Amino acid sequence: MTAARRLADATTMRVGGDVDRWIEATTRDEVVSAYAELLERDEEHLLLGGGSNTVASDERYEGTVLRVATRGIRTLPAAERPHRPPGEEPPLDDAVVLRVEAGESWDALVALAVAEGLTGIEALSGVPGSVGAAPIQNIGAYGQELSATLQGIELLCLDEHGELAVREVPASELRLGYRDSAIKQGVLRGVVLSVDLRLRRSPDGRSQPIAYQQLATALDVELGTRVPLEDVRSSVLALRDSKGMVLSDDPDSVSAGSFFTNPIVSARFAATLPKELPRWSTAPEPRATVLPLDADTALPSFDRRVPRVKLSAAWLIEQAGIGRGFSLPGSRAAVSTKHTLALTNRGGATGEEIAELARFVQARVENQFGVHLVPEPVLVGLSL
Image 1: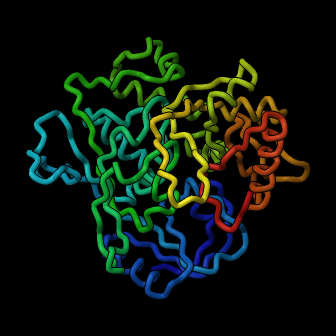
Image 2: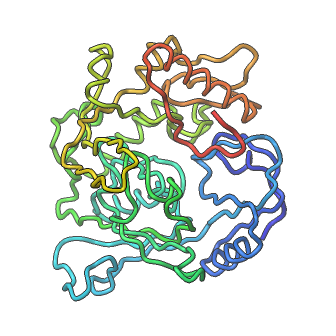
Image 3: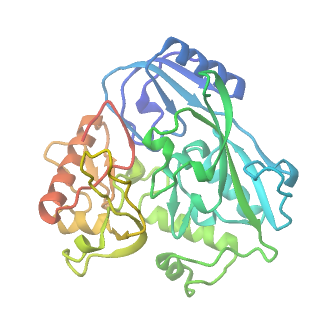
């Protein structure tokens, strides 16, 4: 345990007030002990990893921050791999399953995988934060998403008897969606202890087929081309750096990354928006059905599915009249000078100034296009 600290000192946005109590847990035993105490005391608490996806109020946090700072990466032998149906033989393939402790740096993990010739997460280079936060957000970038390689997690949570236990949760139970999961939704509650990733060993040191046009252009190759893993990593880092999305001395990197998710709307609604608005088809979702309050009414069938379209939030923001570097009069919060999806702390900004700017951006886009932008980071003591 450590003395009280400020959230501003532990988050990449550098906002947030003092904390009543701060626990830095560097071992599993410390995580389990601290979390058990928090539950027993029914105490207000905040789980924190790398702090790259948290924007907090400057008001004092009247509770405990539990920062998970565990370390460790190991390869699971085939016979020990969890998340397999009972009785199924261990798979004989080129898969390598890594069990990574939650406090490990995500980007350090990617660097290790690339160095070891393991494919599946190379395009996620430069994503800030810890490994334990990755499944909560289902992180993704440049044509790769965590859900494609995630096998499952170890979750410290209450079991059906109300006892604290470590549960192996397969990825299929995490309801992974676009920057979403059952943990983020609050359906699953607990502390992520470790993450299991199923990567592939590349015999020729080449990546998975490039699946994102901007990355393909940067590499000067066609979509679907496999290139050296190191080339993918260096190109992704350069692209992210050009947008202020790599932690550095760049003032634009004092942010929480993309502040808004790209909105997903029905294809019918998308057809009403300007044709030049960049959009991408996504997996369809069940159509919502309203039923009368009648006990004899059968449950609806979800065979019919509604086509969905992902829209470019950056385009919507820019076309709503908010350009790079925009700030409200007298505010120390501003839109990044490199990318309109990022809101930045230009020096001494408060959490409320960040929230005020976010609300302004939301209002402009909603008034102009009828689209509500959803924030990506966790807001602590703030509301939009």
